[in-house]
Image (cartoon, rainbow, N blue to C red):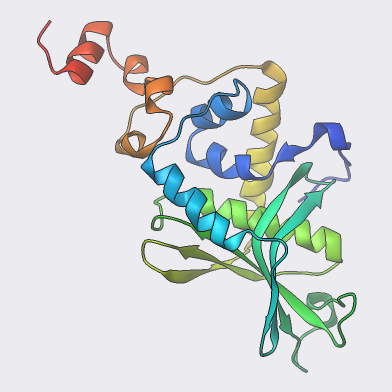
Length: 229
């Protein structure tokens, strides 16, 4: 459960960092502690996808759905800030409970928020994308004084959405990750790397050098250079 603590603006973490941290703590530390970054084809493709989506000047209505793009998010109780790719506001139905609906400035009626996060690839094995989306929903809940049960992840490689339920377990994971992030931030420590097949797609692999953390220098050079030493 979220504690009663309220974080000041200077102590807010980037919401996008949750995805990095849940995917790889060392990746998060290299980006958010050491301010290191490197692009590869996957990051370029991801940027292109988000340029099409994250245009705050575009607000459209499709039937009973209002689509808001690049919506700023903040939660003082979680201590995070960021941007939602898309937040859909669905016209409320008669059976919707009051705690799940909100009013929108300049719009008649009641609306149910539904966050959508866009990813370039395909679903991953862990929960890194889900916790990022859940954190967006938790920000919206605080901002709009509403409860949000569901959202979706859109994967560009498959061109389809995956529904995500914001369970108590997923919410607890968000809070747990944020707590760990703050501990590392306060210590200024970058965790060591553990090589896995997921490292091959990471744009920071040449900065991270994950194999060097799990083998001898000779084994590392042999692996990268393909030479017997």
